[in-house]
Length: 413
Image (cartoon, rainbow, N blue to C red; front, side, top):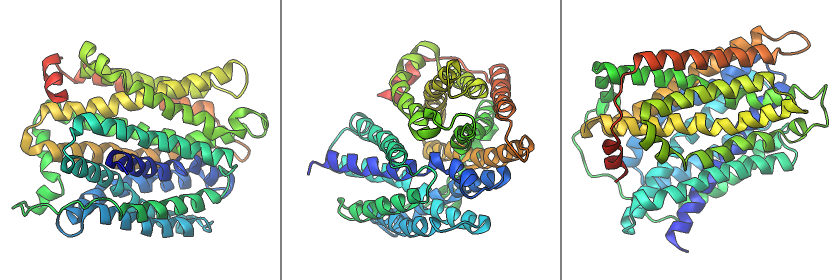
């Protein structure tokens, strides 16, 4: 089998196992297990906790002790066991710890999938910059296909989504052992601080970088809100609109967000070249404002459904424009010796600390606007929208950056 096809399969199923449960989890926790808003928020905190240090630890293991493709396979095989057990759990405390255990294995596997792909493509003499993006986009497609599969099988409110994830994860783990070998890294004289990527905190001495990283964390807060509450929001229409598309096929509706993501990613080179990183990031923040505001006025019928669909569409800009432009900013502005660590710091602040804070605080907000009979979703979403708008205004004032198209061309090779 062609090596590019084999790597495409690996990337497809890497995010397939994520999409099979992530988006529908909030609705399942609220609808089937009847967890409170705070409890649901804390469950989603496990993603942030697992993202803070586990990727660095697993990266050290892959560099020094166990070939990356084998470690990747083991993470998924063991993770399949966690998911299989999770399907039978109904107690909040047990669910929290099992989910944390699973994500401690899964979150590092995302970086390993990239590392395995880069290494193998280089060994086969491919241009990684040119060849990898078309392979990686199949990961997003895998995420979408998983969402559709769970929806069409009627499992968004069923523990079967976890059994499904476990089965696919087990197959992916076994498949990883068939991949070409990724050699261990050559011995390097690095301290533990450097290996964990903590040396990048020295970049905070530069006020421009400090402001950027702080806002990365603050914007990372909103990234998790959408994942945690979109399906629970759709489930809230069950009583008044039980036969609506939003209720019957919530995953299909929400998947428009990921489809939009695949489209907007293609527009980034144009917007970056024309407007620069600061404007693109501001566009992302304003898109998050629209994402939440449109949810706040949306409903499953008439113009309200149009608002929901438009909210899904702007998600692509909200997600892509911040993540990719932010990563590119780090690539341009940091010295070679900090570049990898700085990228890791960017991910730690957004997917780690930001996601952790966002999950917990959003749970408190949802709980505050929850009565015995319903949640006031309009107020909840509008609070999130105002937060994103405030970020945009303050960021536009504090962040000083002069657009240099030539710098972007250099990074894009």
